[in-house]
Image 1: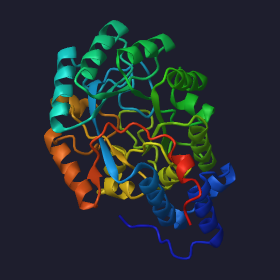
Image 2: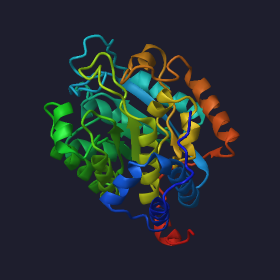
Image 3: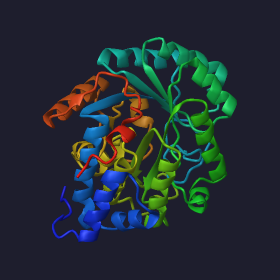
Length: 363
């Protein structure tokens, strides 16, 4: 990947990056200026890597994803799982298949599994709660990514043993959100995040970078919103057009803008868990290493097997679809070791209190 030139960075941008590193605060206008400045990319990445090292350490947390259903009631215009996509081969794993994958995840050495699906109405609480409870009994931290549910459902899943919940906001621009997520409410999405936080989950959210009509100012607002809700995990990925969706012919998201956003998130949310996403690796070979030196501290390899692994097709060209889960695990460990980092041996819960302890220690 050709890196942006970082020489001759204007002094003002150097000052802004230093301010972010030391205070973890920037205004909307300052964030917009940095996001809009390719020349600041390497500067931001280096600053974010320093903050990552100081606050969350050199361990990389591996979290195994189980994609247990690609059936979805929603019709998001950018997503390959959208309800009206008749070209995708639908599937739904049984409770026994899900538990078997979770047991294999334990065998691969994962400390966390991420149970992810489309918004599949088949999985009621009567079906989900026993599955979550059984997976939790394996000694794993359990992250769920199941879309919008009621507060009562979130409570039931938490009581069954769920520790974390991922619900990407995608954008803080409510008009953009409701244009590309027909029938959905931006306020409802934010209400779900509030419910999850108040119920004691570690809450993950994130942004899709490069949606048609999305502004850099909007991305700056996203960062400030995630800071305002004290998000525990933030997943940022570029928009990759899917040929089976209404946005098939749209331009894709920019790798470099996405990277700058990730670095700024680390600078403003120093304690958060931030994954090097699969979508970035899909755009650029070796992107996980690039992102792990730009503020990220999490990687989420896939432990789904067979046809299900192939058919969870959010976007085209997804990397590692043909690999086995065992290969993905060993490959990622080797790549991390080659960077001088290591696979963390704990479950990777957010480390709280570091911000106050470390505040102002950078020069």
